[in-house]
Structure formats: structure tokens, C-alpha cells
Image (cartoon, rainbow, N blue to C red):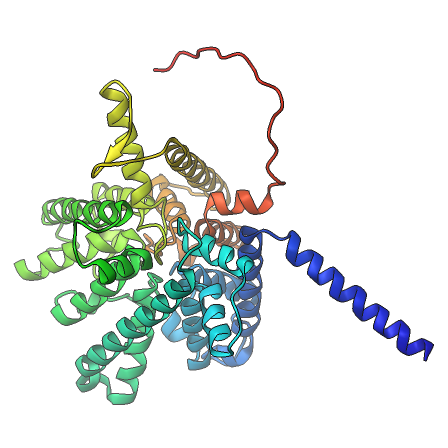
Length: 462
């Protein structure tokens, strides 16, 4: 009897401890923990011998790097996905991409609804933070819309790509390749089962159109897509949706024109391509640095100015709330509007007849500064750990930016990374996926308000 009471007391203590931990963990901290454990599970599975095509383990570090890249929907690889991993390993990578892209909490909401459970305030706050929504209202419906959008786009893309590749590789293999690349593209992961990415499809209009559509829709963000579906009118769209759509169109057009003009002089990339193939290659490569990670031309063979342009596009990234990375295009727009407003003499910052709060501007500034600091610091570390004998600074900067922005493009450095370099890039991918602000909030203490008011003074600027 005493033993039973002791057992119940111990269970009660464990339950109280778990409850206390749940109440004390903030949404950013919980998201960070979930991503970490998801990476651990992926690492264990990918390090198993049956995940390797050779039957021998790929090694803990290679498995860890691949798991981080998949969960963080990055696409940087130290091993060729198609040849180094068995079908089991590839399926594990595909599942990690799907969960990492759509969000663990979104899938959790779907399961909870199917089981008939209620979604509490704590869960809604976690969903709000993971989807970067401005309001906690309507998040359950948003989660359902997200799952529906993912299923719809990936299913249609899989069907079309299966029909396209069936004559080349048979129905079964074509369906598998179509599913893998559809999931990878929609989640902006950039994993491919061909060692050269999608270079062999550089002139294929069907493959180009499907892949571009997938990672553009995923990069726009679920909030924008749902907003478009619900309102179906430019005038009724939210300020966020208008900024994302317009800025995406402008940036993509500029990227296309610049890459087409620059690389047309480069025989190593566009030399053997027809005019239509050059146009398709330029369109593809203008979209893919926004966090997609696929490539139809050899990135290492591009001109240095084109590579630097890709670095800029990778750093900007996709839109908040989407599957892409980077500092987000809406962040850049907010800072540009604030800058132009300062040049005009200050006053209210606005766009499309809507005011932008000062708090939004400060958050945007914090994201840019912290992100830039992270990229430069990682670049500094890689120049030491990789022991470059020649001037490969642009290659190192490209790798650091690609890792942080979760893009997955590479000039060839990834496969040759040292063990320390792999760890650095893996950490960078993790930080880039969660975002500097999310990690800062997750690791910081509770907000403290200063009780001391200091006199204002001036600092010379410029």
C-alpha cells in the first residue's frame, strides 16, 4: 500500500513538473526544441546502414548535416542524395522536408482536429509564431488551409511530372521522382535526386514551369495565398499581401533581366543554349535564389558578378510566413520605405494608404542587422576553417549566405567542407531557418521594463 502511494506521488510530481515546464516554455522556445528533436530523429535514421545505398553508414556528421539541411528546408548537401542514400534514406529526407516546411505545429493541429481535440490558447500562440501571423484569430482555419494548399499543389505537380517523366524512366520511378521533387520544390528545399540538380531539364518548359510555380507559391507564404483565395481582389488584399506580391514581381523581373544580359556573354553557362533556353534558364535562376535551391545551370561556372547578384537575392529571400528563408522581402520593403521617408524629411511611413508602425520598422532593422552579422561572422569562420590557399572569398561568402538564407545553392564548397566547416554550416542553417529573432526570444529572459527614465541626447549620424 505504501509502495502504491509512493508510486502515485512520484507520478504526480512528474505530471506537475511537465505542466510547469509547459507553462514556462515560450512559443519560440518550444519551436526551437521541436526542430532540434526532429533533427535528432532524422540524424539517427539517416546514420543507419539501411539508409545508405552502399549498406554502410554514411557517418554521424554527414547524417546530421543532411538532417539539418532537410528539416531547415535548405538543400545544401555533403553527399549526393540520389546515389549516397537508399530509397529508405531518401524517404526519410522527404518526410523531414515536408514536416520542416509546413511546420510541426500545423501538422499537430491537423492531427488534433482529426482526433476531436480542442486547440487551446497556448497552441494558438505557437501557431501564430510559427506562421508569423499578426493575429491569433482564425489560426486553426489557416492551418487547415495550409495543409489543403500543400496537398493540392504537391499532388497536381506530382501528377504532371509523372506524366512528363514516365516515358524516360517508367511509371513507378517517374512517380517517385515526381513526388520527391514536388515536395522539395514546394517547401523551397532544393534537394534533387540528380547529381547535377535540374541542369538536364534546362530547356524543358514543363519541368521549369512546374518547379518554378511550386517554389514561388511556397515562397509567397500561406498567409498571402489564403488572402488571395478569400478576397480575390487586389483592392481588398492586406498590406502584407500587396507588398509581397508587388516586390516579388519587381525583384524577379530585375533578376531575370540582369542574369540574361550578364550570362549571355558567358560561354560556360549559356554558350550552348538556344535563345528560348537562355530565357528559361534566366527565369529559373532569378527565382531560385529566393530560397528554392534548385539550379538548371552550373552555379560555379557563372560570372562573378552573377554569383554576387545571387548572393544578394539569397540574402533577401522569400516572404514571411512562407517556406523560404532570407531576411524576407517584406523586411527589405519596410526598410526601403523608412529610408525614403527619411530622405523626404520624416513623418508617417506608409504604403498603399496604410500606416506602417515604428515597431515594425525597428523589428525589420533588427532582423537585417542580426542576419548580416551572422552571415559575416560565418564567412569569417569559414575562411579560417577551410584554409583557403587561393582567393575564394566569394565562394565562402556564397556558402555562408546560402546556408543562412536556407537557399541551398552552392559554388562547390559544400562537398569539400572540413568536419568543423560542416558543423558551422549546420548551425548556420538551423539559425537561418528559425530566424535570429526567434532564437533571441527563445534564449532571452522575460521582458523587463526599465523603471529609470534617462534624459534624451543626440548622436551624429552620417
